[in-house]
Image 1 (tube, rainbow, N blue to C red):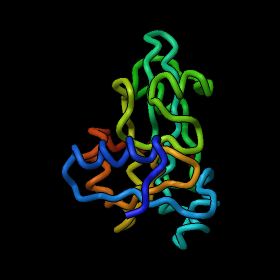
Image 2 (cartoon, rainbow, N blue to C red):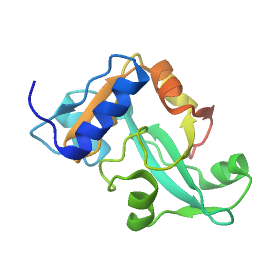
Image 3 (spheres, rainbow, N blue to C red):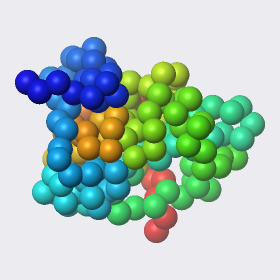
Length: 160
């Protein structure tokens, strides 16, 4: 097996600790955006489990929302679910909270505990693809594995 970049290797180790048999793959094309990832993988954009990090304004905790690749997060619904106002996280906040840069933030393996909310629409697919630490690394998993891996709550958190 080819040696993974350090950030992707750290995601692979988190996946191994979870014991689900999931494997990080690094692709030659960019997977930084959902559209790029879907093209590089050869799947539908909605099969990309897009991770977006917010900052809860009162508690200063990281809140990750994972949605289908073509969907946008309804920040009002997320704030209601979290119980406090949220704002888009800065790149520095994202890196400090998760250990990863925007464009490669995985749904697991973070430096610090992150509250995870999952769009219930992710259950519409048998297979999803998530970022794995770099703008070229991904891994495939089922919606059920995503819930188990993240400990996230399934909610309706997208703009309709």
